[in-house]
Length: 112
Length: 115
Image (cartoon, each protein chain N blue to C red):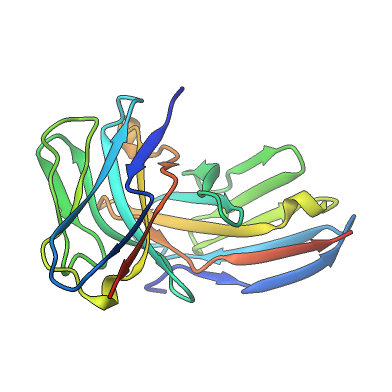
């Protein structure tokens, strides 16, 4: 994988549903994987920065896991709420560059 | 309050008229970066800077210039704007210590229209 890819592109769930998204990134020269939450008309806000294979991070109902060997990360939202509606971005940084490559995002819509 | 500021927030200009979008942060961050956001293309990095006087190209640097003369400021310069540079621009900053594995703080965005 040369680029950062996210799936699905969009997701519609009911309030209370749990959901997850995938971020695939180049596994060679891996350095760090970022997750951001981006609400409409606002700026992206950081959720997690993950660096170690097997890392798991949690913030409230949101958690993320990291597999650097196979080049993927999952973001989980437990018991989705309407306020979780946003676009979730992941970004990968390789060790041989300061570039941060973003995926196209997963847009989540949570219906009350 | 810790923040990244950008000016202007909105700008409509004409092709070929040089412009500068300013970015400033008050968190003493070493790493600063510019992104553009276009529908269907996500955030794409234009330029980044690891520290004062150290800048490097991102994925879409053509048509842009940057400078990093002071730690807090990272202006984006469009010498001769063209309509394909119409976009939403974000500046971001982060610490660069410990290998740069730090979250980025984003500015409020600058919506640029080039006619």
